[in-house]
Amino acid sequence: MKYTDMKTSLITGGAGFIGSHVAQHCLAAGHQVVVLDDLSGGFEDHLPEGVTFVKGSITDHNLLQNLFNQYKFDYVYHLAAYAAEGLSHFIRRFNYTNNLIGSVNLINESVKHKVECFVFTSSIAVYGKGQLPMTEEMVPEPEDPYGVAKYAVELDLKAAHEMFGLNYVIFRPHNVYGENQNIGDKYRNVIGIFMNQIMQEKPLTVFGDGTQTRAFSYIDDVAIPITECVNISDAYNQVFNIGADKPYTINELVSVVSTALDAKPDVSYLQARKEVLHAYSDHSKAHRVFNTNSAITLEEGIRKMANWAKQVGARQSQEFDNIEIQENLPEGWDLTKKPDRSLV
Image (tube, rainbow, N blue to C red):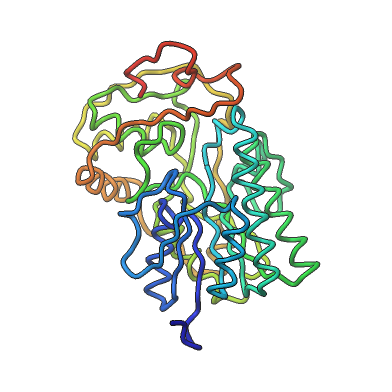
């Protein structure tokens, strides 16, 4: 039953990593929460008690029509995506179907049902090789299909606001880690990959020489502002970079993760992938609007995640079995070659 003073929120991807944390925070804020997830990268045991769970895909527009008709959502938190940036070059149709067309299905229903605010998790992948640090005022120049899809959704939300009055908040998080991350996905989330490899007593696979830099963001620094933005009028119809401020090299990350799991670093350096070498963003706008700063160090956050990972144990890495383009696949991803078992 929906009470007049209770907001009803749809969280897509709510059985996944960031989505499950947003669902927990929404429940704590008194929302009625409906989670839609196809479980392609999420797990039912990540769902917090109290949510209504619907197994399904955002690409199923008939399902979405039925859900919006039934629940009359006040807010939509759209976190469902296949966020394998490097792999997106090789799964272009899959990428655009899930990350763009699925998002448009949600926007259509949100417009038709007068949703109060549509919260979208984009990515700093939209920036490409922009100047550092990346700021919201820069013109995005994405270099991979994942970033292209995310930026297209951002533009569509702006157009939907101007045409139909749909309010939105766009977040561009980056390199998020923490409890509930899918550590069995070998195509994304380097911290989870490293932890999974250590727990399986395998070498840590690093593409290139490990000098590329990223600012790794603990989940609470991202999920809490995403949840609370619907209550902050200054956030409406704005774009925010969000995440940690300090960048680290992958080699430095190897050391921190290994220490957290009481392991001696054992690294296998692979051929470099086509990727942005240095990526970190400025968060002064988010700090100003949400009155927050990164509250946890990399060492503290990874220690928390490592304690969780020890409890859940290693997960078997799954191959993505629908590669559309085999040419130029990174080492360890080419399914036409005999797999090196140290990489899976």
